[in-house]
Image (cartoon, rainbow, N blue to C red; front, side, top):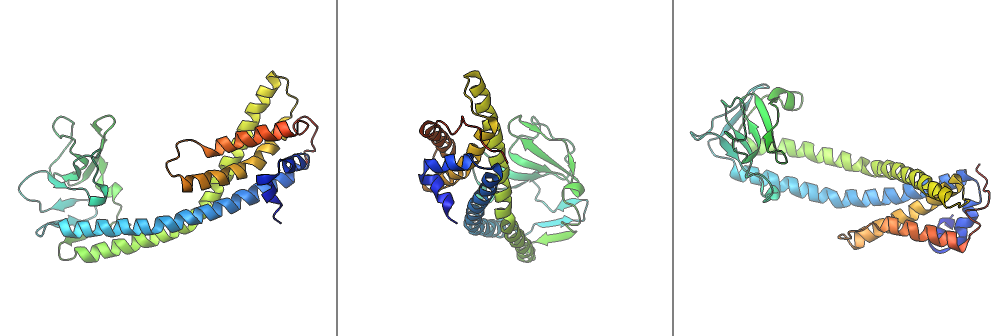
Length: 287
């Protein structure tokens, strides 16, 4: 049952598997990568959920604290109206959790009568510009405003029904949104391990295929007699080991700037090839 552990400690085990049928190697690949991915995906989900809930709590608290006492926001499904103070535009600041020197000064600015913004007349102090019916997003890389987007297309009535928001009912509205957010996070993170498995299966197969092709082509140039199938088999065996060690290294050393996976892959590939020269030269069974 635990024969796969030999892949970590016994180079001869690679010889035994590569010399055998590919279906056994594929079965072991999917099983090992699947187990590693489920464990890692579940770990990430458990680690991420409290952080997201804490972030949502912080943002909700900021909104309630900084919401102007006299402000009333009216959304009728097509038009956005704010009984803003005399100064125009009315600026909406960033929640404390998102304040960053690289971001624009404000999250959004509202100008009921704004027609078309420009970088000259509308200084890029906000990420978003809102009028009564339109939305624009500022592109920091090009320093230009996006094309206008109708608010009734951005905030579809199915998800954003007509509402009046004021200081008096703000806590209730935030509570409703907060509950939907928590449900969304719980469902999303519940599926996260599945997406992790599918992602690692796909990336592992693509890596094994492309790397086998590259090494086989180089082998052709230097007259190395290994077949493409033999190299592909060996890649399928190494990928789960490299993946597991990459994850462990990332957890122990979060600031690691180089790929532990690729280092592991090439070390094992070279050691197996040198230790068993016949491994990648003999004719292997392919079924």
